[in-house]
Length: 207
Image (cartoon, rainbow, N blue to C red; front, top):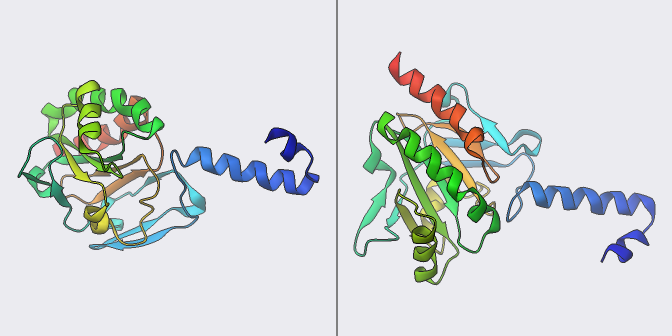
């Protein structure tokens, strides 16, 4: 593959290299530049194809639609964002098949444990895993303490809007206490990437 690319004319090589960088930035998939979506009253915009998007104030983009679905670990149970009324909610889209999802799992759990007593909830959304037992093994093996919605067909994500870049896995969405969108991360995260946004929202709730 490298030899084939090296044999291309210079301008074409540059285009191929740029495309490869974009694939890396998008984690397990890719996001369109300047993506726009309507989900509930949420209007998603990624200016210039950014992977870290912050909305200040959160009301500038509004709330997501009703997001709920079957609980991954408990049969006959429905889990919903509305279960966490008045709490900051960190929503993480993940799949056990996704390498960056496996890489960020310990960091997300660390942030969850550090903030759960501050009114911060985490909710996973497991996507594209047709074998539920493998997704459950992921939760058990990584000692994930927060719930996940089992959504192999990604139907629950309709709440985010039809044009939201749900092809980008992992994605993390942070909601404030009114469940307005405060931040969107279209990449795998470290604890230090996520914690400052949570700190800001916790402080806002104390003012």
